[in-house]
View 1 (cartoon, rainbow, N blue to C red):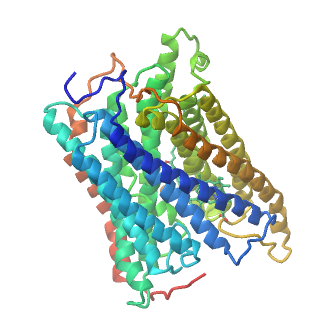
View 2 (view 1 turned 90 degrees about the horizontal axis):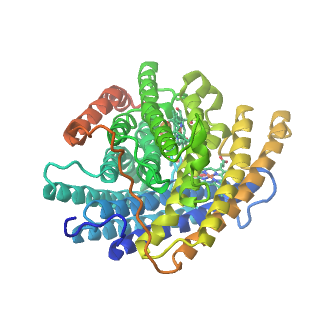
View 3 (view 1 turned 30 degrees about the vertical axis):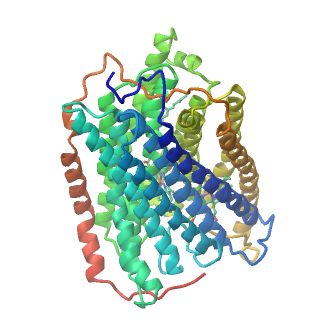
Length: 553
Ligand code: HAS
Ligand code: HEM
Ligand code: CU
């Protein structure tokens, strides 16, 4: 064991780095709490149970919910989690400069978040988390977003720098799997956020300050979805990191294949960006050929998820057989069901099966015509990001916070964690289930309570809205319990908690070095993006049509 490296079983997580991790996690869960209040109110408004007081608009609420949940909760959690793993697997602690970059990124992100959320809560940015033009927000909302993105870049560069340093001091060695995955995640983020940075800086900010009068709506939506789809993989990849690297260790098994895990992340990097048009299938202004091409690529990006499913089943089954399990499903009996560090992410995996199937339906052009802009889509992403990803993040929290603060997970906290997971799944069953069903009947997303002047179809949606509200209420109890758990974990008894990093199976083939060759993968990724986007983007820029003025809801 080299100096400066850690022994896996005697975890001495660098507590100085731990502070940086904890800061990120705390902001994430404050966002979950406020976003949860908004979410609960949305379900109550939609079902006609409450009317919003003090002139609060429904869009104001929904913007707060979308931004706090989908952007703030996720990004902070991800950076906190990835920094912890980078510190642990790349030398045992962060380089001083990387620690400082982490704090600088955190500071910029927090200033940006505070500014953006202040605009939303004062009703000056009711433009939803996708901030589609021509809905117009205060320029300070967009500036807040820009700061959030720039802050996340600096944090990402910190991760790159730590790996570069590690490679220099470990010549000829392949990077640890966790670090490799963290770098891919942030590479993808780096390439994807260029789209939204361009939209915000070149289009939205000048337009919202009034320096230009109109905006090219088609172009802005395309730049948004160039970023918006990889955004959902930016949430998913850290969850996959837990499934691939952490879960095998927690169940006492091994990683099925290091090489397969790396390959799946490379495929995610290649195919998650040039697919934004699957969010724009119903939009005019993009020719069907380019939509078709991006749908083909969308089905390609499903492949690494199928590889992930295969690999997880293999880990579970081999681990089960090693422990004496027999038959096709004998492994199920030997899983550590009473351990929340396994239980919460496992339910996330299980729910990802219907969640992913819904995605395949969305991506099919003809079926997209049925579900687009209905509550079906809202149901889809409450399964993907708000359950598979969120439950995995919750599951991580139960060992991460103790590990980085020098504490232990008590039996009582473990039990509360199991209860929290069950509450979440029950609440989501009702809420997302009702959303999926009523969406198929045509109920639109992003609407407050309305009877459409007594329309009979709309009246038939009401019972589903009531189920959504019941689910939303149960989920809100889950949010409260989770936030309680986070603060209780921060005051848990002192002790040593292992940072659970799995190892590959002995029989697994050696990882081929070309998987670690970044220049090849980055070039391929850029090439695919250019193929998928150059012609349609040129078209939108050369034939901008009539620009739109801004609208304030
Ligand atoms: Fe999606 C809309 C297509 C995955 C999130 N998606 C959204 C929106 C969000 C979102 C937020 O093509 C709404 C954006 C908005 O506001 O307008 N999505 C897909 C496809 C996939 C997919 C093809 N989405 C995700 C993930 C998300 C996410 C992941 C967040 C984390 N989505 C769409 C489309 C739209 C869309 C259209 C636009 C709809 C519209 O019209 O507006 C795929 O990547 C899914 C692949 C996944 C699988 C599942 C693999 C299963 C695994 C689990 C294994 C389990 C085990 C346990 C081992 C094929 C890995 C087993 C245990 C046992 C006991 C059995
Ligand atoms: C939208 C409820 C948790 C992300 C919605 C809507 C409802 C809702 C009712 C749809 C409103 C509409 O279309 O009119 C809840 C409740 C939650 C919860 C009750 C738990 C207490 C989450 C979590 C995430 C999330 C954990 C992500 C991590 C979103 C997003 C939207 C949304 C991105 C779309 C906003 C938009 O269309 O602009 N939520 N949700 N939600 N939710 Fe949640
Ligand atoms: Cu997508």
